[in-house]
Length: 126
Image (tube, rainbow, N blue to C red):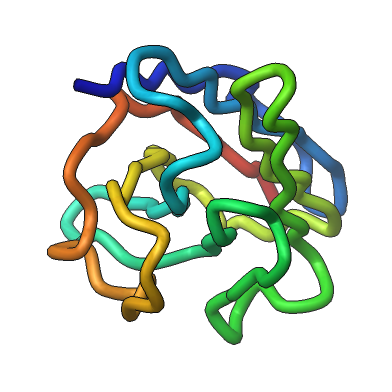
């Protein structure tokens, strides 16, 4: 079992920054990959970023490359998503998710994840 709790969302103007946190508990944190997804009203959930269990590699969807940075602190059982140069189209509910493996898998696919947090809302005004 893994519990995930997101925080750090809010309302920000376009061009601003936010840092999301995903605090994990339960299974040993360094034994699984973590991803961030988002879902805007009326749209499907989409992959945003992911990081391997040991932090050695990160992955991003094209629309956030160069603006968002995912990182993890295995001593604090927390994954972060630093979001800079935010745009109105980044507005969504952001979820972190855990894929309970250290194997190489396609972390862009939501079906690879076993546990999900409740989400934190990010709203970017123009």
